[in-house]
Length: 162
Image 1: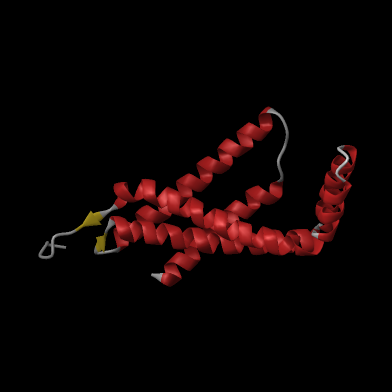
Image 2: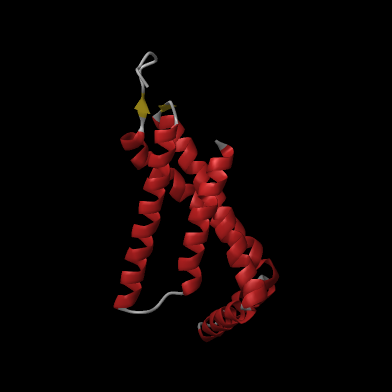
């Protein structure tokens, strides 16, 4: 089961990373992109969970929750690695521009100490992003599987014809 979970997490992580790296437009388009992202990830998660339940002789609610949580963990790992690679190798200016914007805002508000702390925190940001993606995707996988697990659980009688 762990190899299936890892491959499914890889697929879900890559799909999530594509949506993440595309960027966030503004206005009404942002809402449409968010709805598309949510619909695709929920639909893919449902498909993967349903496929896993069909291949198992006995797929209980606990199996569904465990599978969904582990899939979320693996997809968070994949998405976190891809995002860290993006902000460190492909486009390091994105984080610098964001930090400059934050420092400027804190200085305008008269919070110079906080602005200095933000600048000192810069080297640790990739680690923070990676860990936060692990927690976020694991939590989302747990929530999705808690809801969807009740609909995909199945037990076959021990002496069935199949």
